[in-house]
Image 1: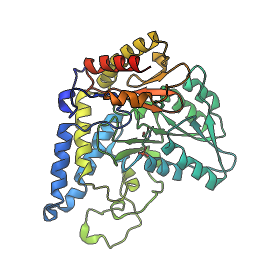
Image 2: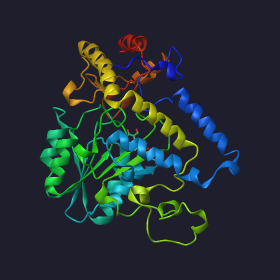
Image 3: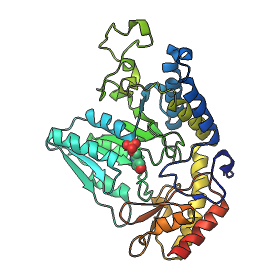
Image 4: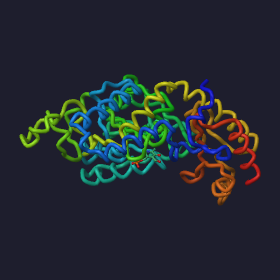
Length: 378
Ligand SMILES: Cc1ncc(COP(=O)(O)O)c(C=O)c1O
């Protein structure tokens, strides 16, 4: 168990912020790195060619280590949608083939598939939420030879419903489907091992559970997908772009590994050092420890909610860092606003779940105040 880490964050004592799935707060140390990296742009004569690559390479390494990948497998992207669009560009879709997604899936993992399916004459099949919340069974039953790609989360963004991606990945390989994962609501708080799950693509935006800045993210690309086509073309994605004097010796060859999929201007002097500093802290805590520490808190909250007649997913069907509260008759009108008026922050997502997502900054007083204010507001 990790002790409360609130001292690392800029959170006033009367704020109970149980909303990491919305936006995580930056740590003091990450903000300081951001201030310093912003100051560098005031003195561009001090920025040297190596600066366009060093932080990017470190970011690749830090993220690769988090998911058990190699540095070569990581591309730098500005958003989950960018990574999913890259995956969609490289999936062989055709008439008669399907993209499998879940009901109420996050739109950045829906729209790229709809567009790509339209271009190729393929179909997007949306699996309805199973009554028993067993998404894994539902996905396994749906996976057959028609499916070209299963585009899934690890934990559903509305309520944290957990999908056993190891079993899903194995079934995808049996039927010849690709597996594309949006890990934005899980990686950093829920262990992810690319060697066990074997996704073709995994994308993660940094501004939630990776505790990083907005407009940055990582795309893991399986080695057998390294030779695909990026969605844009820029100087740094091409071979030997480190040599600035040779940039107009235009080259057809791409930079090695997954680097060809990097977004333009990915040598981002402002954001990359912040994202790297946050990742170093996540490594220091350890993702398994983060998961177990947050799970202990969501378990306590779930027990209290269940006693009030509010339903939560059974513990073996949800990710430990995530709690979706299902009220009999739906989330009461204006509930999140009433909580926010008391400086208690959670969010309503999907049609009928109130999402409670604490992290290591949450203390016992926050938990008690959340329970007290919620009970009074109902
Ligand atoms: C599951 C999931 N994926 C992705 C995102 C962010 O997507 P993007 O980076 O495309 O804005 C969110 C934001 O709430 C999310 O919940």
